[in-house]
Image 1: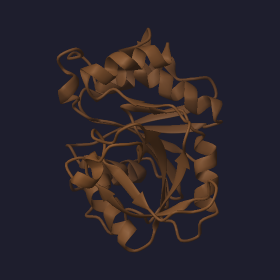
Image 2: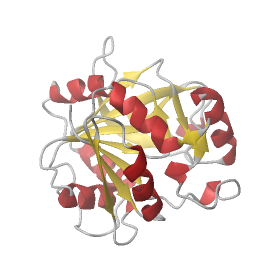
Image 3: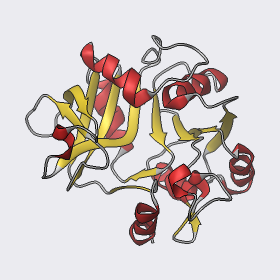
Image 4: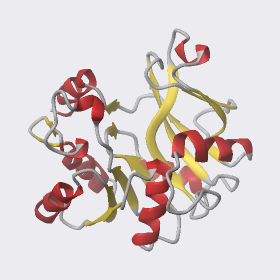
Length: 243
């Protein structure tokens, strides 16, 4: 299984009304830190190497990992020197952790119950892909924005053609939608075009650029559970799902 980088450096500004004394990834959900749920799921997938890209209150994450790493899993922390954005944080983490091959990246404030191993397999069997996204199906995309892609038969990987941001009319259209589930497989050169040690967004800069070149693909998970804890409302719902 590929190494996994978890982006755990966000400030969690929208969640501070209910969790203000710890990084978002350590917010308690169903009696344990959210990060523990993520690591438990990865352990069931056979993941043995995890890098936590930390930032705000990163020392708390390091202290937690020192006591609570799952058996058989090597968990390391890499703290960004300043906020680098999702793309910049990944570039920094791969360099510091000496990851030279393909890897899995995931957001530390979302839980996706689909198979990471299936996503890795889809990436390996799609030669044109520099990055492969997991797509979750939700009742409405007004909070997330839609991922646009070419249709394909069955559940084959699809080529991503673009994104309808949540502010756009296309994203707020009624009905179910496919959204970015916050889990990706990236080739080692997927971030090569970006500036080093500078702030850059994976979602708004790197992925659109790869999509234009036909190098961004996705695998759809129509029934996989998905949640984020980015707002107090969704944070409350997370307890029900992960109890």
